[in-house]
Image (cartoon, rainbow, N blue to C red; front, side, top):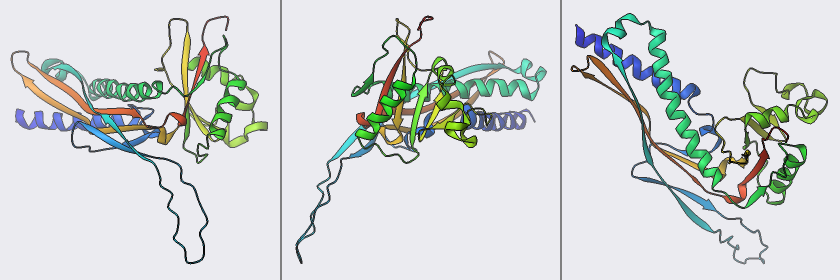
Length: 278
C-alpha cells in the first residue's frame, strides 16, 4: 500500500513541477528562437545573410543570391534544484504546501532559463545606447527604434524589449506609452492583468533579472526573436527518491539547456541610470 501511495505522490509532484514551469517559470523563453529535444552537448542554429535580387536576360540563367550561411553552436549546460520533503511533515501538510515546493523548484529553473537568455543578450556589442546619466527616456526609445529601421530588422510582431522595473515605471510616465490618444484603447498598459505592453510594434516586458553594474547602470535589451537561440536537450524533469536514513524524499528538479547570440545587429542594448537623482 505504501508503494502505491509513493508512486501517486511522485507522479502528481512531477506533474505539478512541469505545469508550474510551463505556467510561470520563464518569461523570456518564448521570445527567442528555441530548439527542443536536442541530442548531444550542443545545438546548431543557422544564420543566413541578406540576398540580392537581380535581372536576367531572355532565356538566360536565373541569378543565384549566394546567401552567406553561418552555423552558430550553442553549448548545453545541466542545472539542478533539489530539496528534502520529510515523510512525517508530508503527512501533516496539505496539497497547497506541496505545491509551494513544486513551484519553488520550477521557478528556480525558470530563472536560470532567463539568465541564460539574458547572458546571451548581454554578449551583443554592436548597438549600444549609453546611459548619459539619465534613466529610460523617449529619446532612447526613438534612437533604438531608428537603429532597427536602418538595419532592416523585420517589423513583424517578433520584436521584444525587456526592461528593469525602474525603467518600466519611467515608461509609465510617458504619455506616448500610456495614453489612449497615442496608443489606442486596446494597447493601454493597464488593460490586462499581465505586466506587458505592445508599443511601436514591440512587446515591452519588465524583468527583475537584468544586469546592473556598480554605478547603478541597468542594461535593457530591445531585440528581434531571431537574434538569440535557446536550446533544450531536456526540459524540466523531476526525480524523487526515498532515503530511509533521513525518513524523507529527496526531490531533484533538473534540466539541460543553453542560449547563445546569433545576430548582433538584431539587438540594441539600452543602458539606463538608476541612481536616485537620475
